[in-house]
Length: 244
Image (tube, rainbow, N blue to C red; front, side, top):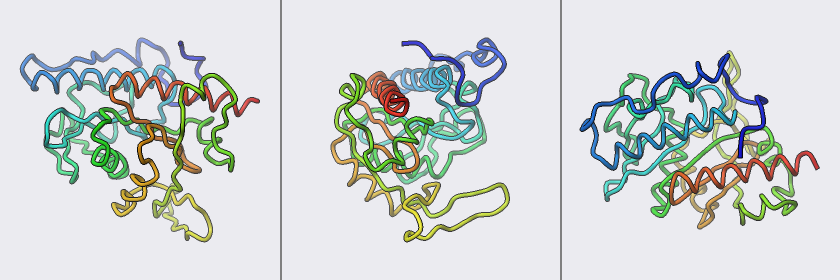
């Protein structure tokens, strides 16, 4: 299970430069033990996704839910590349979007990422980690009527997949903000509407993998490792289907 070469995502000139910052960059006792562990694991996940060339600049998001009854999640600050994420940069927020700990930057969070992840974490207490990406192969499959087909072993590993017609209100060019009417397209861009959380949760149901039509995917796992495992095989399954 090793990256297939640099074909996608934002990369720097060398592996050493991309991964020169230490993941564990806080002093002992700076965070509660379990939060400290999850911060390190989530930051490592960002590095791993970058290593596999699944990253897309500063966009997309991966989160973990902290233990306890307060429903707090860790999310990346909006503005850092994946290879720049460390344990201390991660932002702690609640499900209402309140920043409980800004991390070691002043960047804040991306509203679209918060909307999507808070919806899933709020409805699925069984999921510790949620990954949202849009790699080329998965985006291509998300635009087909048939969706993911059982063509290979990897699709069998992924198992049943849910689908969601993305309903965000706008998409952006370099200068103009366009509004797309529902009659014109199911895909309307970046998710910022809190009302869409209900339809997201309803469509995902009890599934751990959901393809967002004309966009990408969301994967949830009971652990960070399980979420990565499903993500890896979903991407391979879509790559196989696209090349078939």
